[in-house]
Image (cartoon, rainbow, N blue to C red; front, side):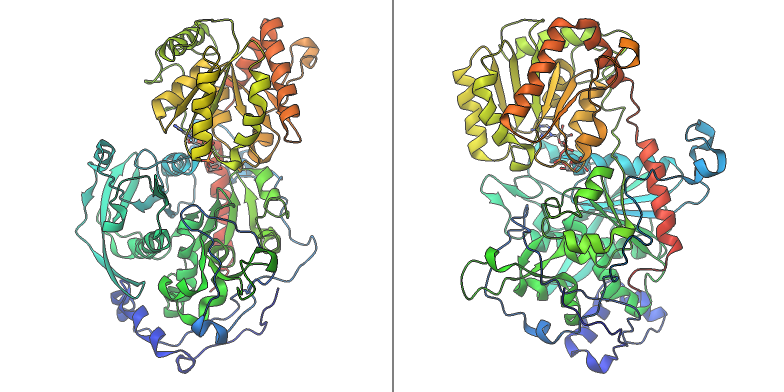
Length: 633
Ligand SMILES: Nc1ncnc2c1ncn2[C@@H]1O[C@H](COP(=O)(O)OP(=O)(O)O[C@H]2O[C@H](CO)[C@@H](O)[C@H](O)[C@H]2O)[C@@H](O)[C@H]1O
């Protein structure tokens, strides 16, 4: 790490003229006009970290990690502060595996009980996210940001979710029809111009769903791209989202009152990562958001929002804050001899400015601090280990309930499993597979992506097809893998079905029908499909990594005096052979030990997957965030 250590106070004289005016013109100008805030920028104990080590980053969804010979303009004479606390050994480091105690537990010694559900301290919480189901979803991020806010609102917090109002010209646009225009447009200064964005709002399930509207969110495709790949202007689209999200609590009178400055921003992944940087660089120097706190939730570290360094000027940040998002690729990752490896990395910007960091499972909280799991950010994350915690995701148990699921043809429960085999027969009919209720049905649902271990499935499939099994896969992503699924389907007509596309009802039907759910993810921050599977009596066979290792307990038939324990199988290391070995044990158990299998299913179905438990842990982290002063004040 290279950084300038001395804390400085900058006077406005040190700032280029470009800084002095634009920030005043953005939406919160009215706010600090009232406060008669002067233009001097005082940064007392911080800031900007220049990462010269570590690399990776790789390609980002929607933000290709282009390497160019860059001209970073003002950045070269930017002031660099030291954001990262010096390594302090183990002092004060919170073990991410330690169970977070909750206020309620501390007071009652009991983590359950309906009356105790409402917390004593409530917060104004602002989620910022690129996806929130059911409005937008391409994966688990949408699920989490669609259900955790509702769980927190049920605990008494005031909760707003800010995400884009995507319109792709299909019937799915209807989902936004309940949201009305708040008729409170704001102007955002970024990308060398002024953009007008407006806000739509729907109050549902106790949550203020706020949708940022701009023409760049209106186009065919999914939130990040279309058939031709990621959109080239994703940095612009999510920069707009972040600027708008910073203004929303100040200017939107939701239910008659704004959320105000004392709120807690929960920013999710790189798309929302500019929020804490904006708070530190643009708002706090002018006395705004002094009492706010920020928490970064990392759902997937492989995507960091990396773009060429020249794009820094577009972000709407003061020039001297370049170091906060500066990213330098290691020499081996550069494309040619003149490439300096200079880039901006938005996720890194959040890591060095947020108050606390969360990952979506405890295991992943540790993995991100290792060279293998840190995607070039492990050193930075290790330096902030004291404020990193892992909280395992919950699931929406009303949407994912086999006893009432509207997408499945027959219902069942742990008490009466008979509907499950009927679901299986119905799916075999629907997919024109041989109708064989006793044949083990293996399912896979997920993005066709390196992360999900699709290459391992491809290697193992010819051998697996030698067994008496059926394999049904649902997924979209890498076109080569999509094509491979089509080829497998025509090669193994009686055993293999591959559904290319994103289809929520089918994902429910596969989960309800399959006996075994396969998840050979190379890394998995949490994983939701194994949780859905267990709730639906499908036994997961997973690679022992991240959240999969945390949530799937290995089956042991001899424990408990022969009644057995565990909810599935984990295998490690990740390879074709270890995966096939685990699958074969699962298949044999299914065939030859029916009572054990049924107990295995029931143990999975009876586990508590609700968001309630996770929401309590989130509250503990919020409390810690407000106990400490802002990390960058
Ligand atoms: N073709 C398809 N059709 C229909 N539905 C499909 C689908 N492909 C995927 N899905 C759905 O998308 C969701 C995927 O969630 P995951 O948690 O498994 O992965 P994802 O990698 O997107 O999420 C990231 O964020 C989440 C949330 O924190 C973490 O759990 C995870 O580890 C991390 O990688 C599930 O609801 C699944 O059913």
